Image (cartoon, rainbow, N blue to C red; front, top):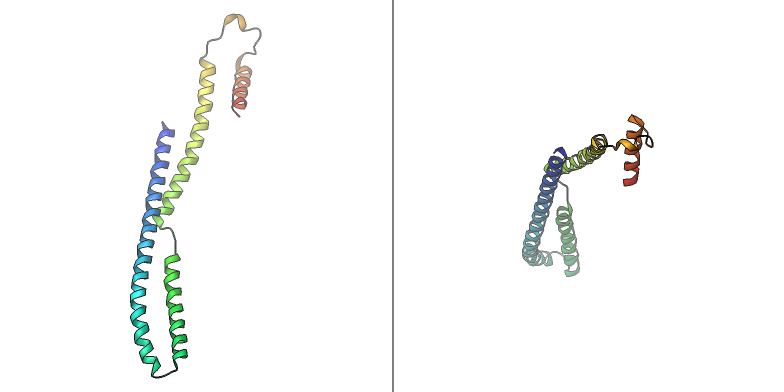
Length: 153
């Protein structure tokens, strides 16, 4: 029963983690799209205004270089914000819970398999005519357990 509960915990933790990842990625996409639309509109108007202002002070070539440098700085800032991809605390904790549940489930499965083998060997009826050919007691039990465990590998 413990194994089933651990499997449920692992599945729930993984589902929560995947939902949080999807939410984070959706938010990143929305912020990136909004930033792109806003940046295009602002930069078109800003370029027109700055060009008109700078043409009065510097040559048109210098004006273009100044606007290019400004565009590169803003594009770098927006690119950095879009690329930041840190998992939040809930996602990290859900991943740790899932990993721990899977480890415990594997341990539980190993103990359950061994317990079922021992129970099957102890409760199995032995024919009375066969007692002389097989070792008796603990040695026989340990030998059969080892043989079955090794046969599974």
